[in-house]
Image 1 (cartoon, rainbow, N blue to C red):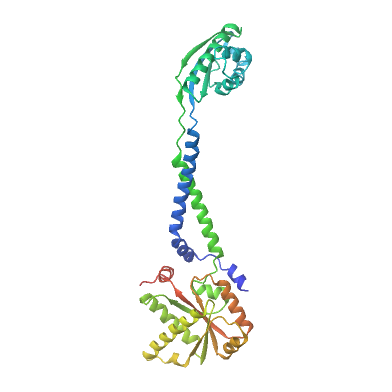
Image 2: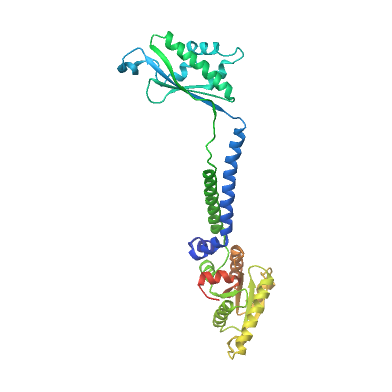
Amino acid sequence: MENERFMQEGIDGKRVLWLVWKKIWFFIGAACAGAALGGGIYLSVHLLSASQREYEAVSKIYLHFNCDPEDFNELAYNGYTWNDLMATDPILNYTMEKLPPEMDRETVIRATKAEILSDIRLLTVTITTDRPELSAQIMEATQAALIHLGETDPLFESIEIYSTSEPKQILWDNRTLRAAATGAVIALFAAVAAAAFYYVMDDSVYVAADVEKRYGIPAAGILAEGNGKLAEGFDEEFLANYCYLGRDMKKVALVSADAEEDAEKAAKRIERLAEKKEGAGDGRSEQIQLLDGGMPEDGEAYDRLREADGVLVAVRFGGKNGKAMERLIGNLRKQDCKIFGAVIVDAKEDFLRMYYKRSK
């Protein structure tokens, strides 16, 4: 039954807001850590790759075809085949002749890229190597091979070199800020998901509604930490409910879902409140005899609780004690102990102020 009540509680927006506010630095820290990690990984990868510098030379080469413009699209030399043609023997063999004997063919093939970007008559050749002088050397040999192709292949009237750039180092595109932002968003999403999971799994008791919805017993009130005006207001509210719920009782037993010390602390607090109220001229509480104790563990403890006219259950605020409370309530009911209410102890003033919008 308690499990069903817990699943049917729904989301308490104010409580979620407080839990999120408590963890605001966790979210900020997660976002900062994600940004640092994302930016760090990006920089590390590019700094490591930067140790292998590359130099690029680019040449624009004009192809004078030996045919009418309307026939250009039917030529074997088009934008889809030039990159492959550069590695074929008619061009590559001539290129290798212009290079030192120790030069490897595969090195030249890997370094060379040829493409038609727009006009089929304008060929763009890019040479990329790890040394500027090597890029210039291969570019010079490649241009010579293409000029020779224009002189020997009947498909061309000629091949002309339009322009050639000096080898330049390839600069990586610095996207560190974008990587950092991506890392921050991912980390923040993970933190929010973790917080949502924490909220779903948190069975702590925070407010009176938690007690009443989950366990089906009245919540007599809340005993807040501190001695300020806010705590006094909740003390008065609790004492009024406590005296009314126990109006026909001579002997009340107090048990705790957490520890015997909690029950003893709550008992002393209740006794002080009762004495204060009696001193003010209200004798309603002097008929109640309070017996405190921890979680019942044996038959004798339950015998004493059954002898009492009623049992008040103390549960620590935000103590992740929902299952302990469920166990205690279940055992008290099995033992025919008369539960007349529960009190939440050691409640945080900042939460009570936010949740109930009370002033100090």
